[in-house]
Length: 366
Ligand code: G3P
Ligand code: CA
Image 1: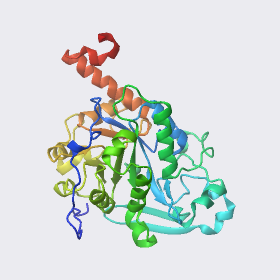
Image 2: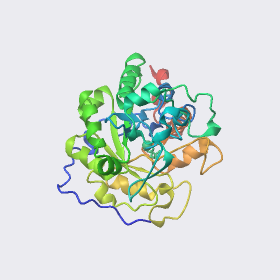
Image 3: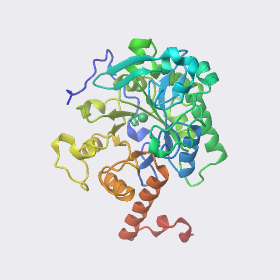
C-alpha cells in the first residue's frame, strides 16, 4: 500500500461547483448510471464506433472514452499508451522501426510498453493512412470484429454521440447519452512529451461548446475522470464540469482531500469490500461508499465484466452484489444486461414497497 496522496498545488483549489449544481450528477431514473466501459466492449473492439453505437442502443447512460495523444497533439480514444494489444499495428510493416520501450510507475498510474508502438510517436494522419484497426483485448471474446474499425479521435466520438442523440433520441430520458472522459497518463505526457492532455481536452470541449455543465447538460452530458489529480485540479479551476477521482486498490486516498476537487470517486470494485479493513461480506453497504456519500461524493466503481465474474457465478447476482454496496453508477462492458438487471431490481423494490405502481409500468396509469 502506498501512502495517502495529497497534492502540492501552488493555488488553492477553487471548486467551481458542488454536486447539487450538476443537474445530471445523479441518475434521475432511480437506478445507478450505466457507463459503457470503452463502449459495449464485451461484444465489440474497445472504443470502436460500433462499440459506442451498440452501447447507445443498449441504453447506456454514458460511453467512456480513454484519451491518448498523438505526436501532433490530436486526442485519440484509446486505452493504452502503446498499440500492440488493441490494434493491428504489428501487421503494418512500414512501422517496424518504430518499436520502443516506455514504463511509468507512480503512485497514481502505471503502464509498461515493451517493444511496442507508442501512440505519441505517430501523427494522427500516419495512423489513419496506415489502415490501423482496432481489436478486442481478449481473444476469448472472439476475433470476428477485429480489423474492421479504425480508431476515433475524441472529436469523432463527440460528433458520433451528438449524431446518435439527434437521430435516435431517447424520448423517455431527461438527459441525453453522454461521454465520461478519462485523461490517461497525464504526468507522462506532461513530463516526457511536453503535452498537457487536460488542456487539450478542455480546448476540444470548448470547440464543441461543451465546456460548462450548463452547456453539457443540454447537449451532451460530460464527466471528467482521471487517476491523476493534476488534470482534475486543472478542470476544477477552469470549469464547473463534474470530475471523478479514479482509485486503484494499491493506493490510499485521503477522501476529505479528494472531495475538495472531485464530485465523485471511481474506485476499483475490490475497494467496495475492503475499505479500511472492513470485514469482507457480499451484501452489506460498502464503508467506502458510505464515507464518500457523507462527504457529498457519488461513487462509480469499475469494471463489471459479465464474462469475468468475481463475486458470483452469474452476471445477475454479480450486479446485485455491486448494487447492494450502494453504488451511484457502474462501469460495465455489457451495458444491456447491466441495465436490465438494474431496472429489474428497481421495479422489484417498487413492487415490494407497494407504493408507486405507475412508475413500475409507465403506461398502465394513464
Ligand atoms: O475509467 C474507469 C476505468 O476504466 C479505469 O480503468 O484502466 O480500464 O481505464 P481503465
Ligand atoms: Ca477508463
